[in-house]
Amino acid sequence: MNQINQKTILVAVTDIFFYTKVRDALMSKGYKIERARTQQDIAEKASATAPSAFILNMNDERLDAFQALETLNADVDMKTIPILAFANHEEVDTFNRARALGVAKIVSRNEFSSRLKDLVEEIAGDRT
Image (cartoon, rainbow, N blue to C red):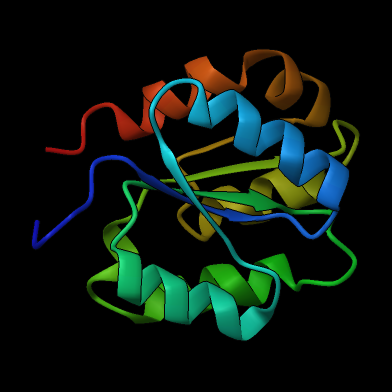
C-alpha cells in the first residue's frame, strides 16, 4: 500500500448532527476525520488523504452512495480502501448492491450507531 495514513477516516455523511457523533466517537480513539460533503469531495479527499477506511451513509439524500462506490472502484488506489456502509435495515436491495460494489461491511443504522468504534477497527485495523 502506498502512503496510507493509518489514522484517517473519510466520512461521507451530510447530516451534521450524525457526522458530529461519528467524528467525536472516532476522534476519541485517535482517528483523524475527513468529511466528504459532496460527490466531488469523495474522490478528491480519498485521493488526497489515502484514508485507512471510508464510511458511507447509503441513505444520504444529498449524496449518491452508489455513484460514490463506483467512483472509488474506478480508481486503482482508491479501490483498496475498505468501506463501512450503513443503511436502513429493511433495504435488502441496498445491502446487496453495496456488497456487489465492494463494500467491506454494511450494517443497519442502529448497529452502526451502537458499534461504530468496533466496526471501524474491524475494517481498518488490518491496513498495514
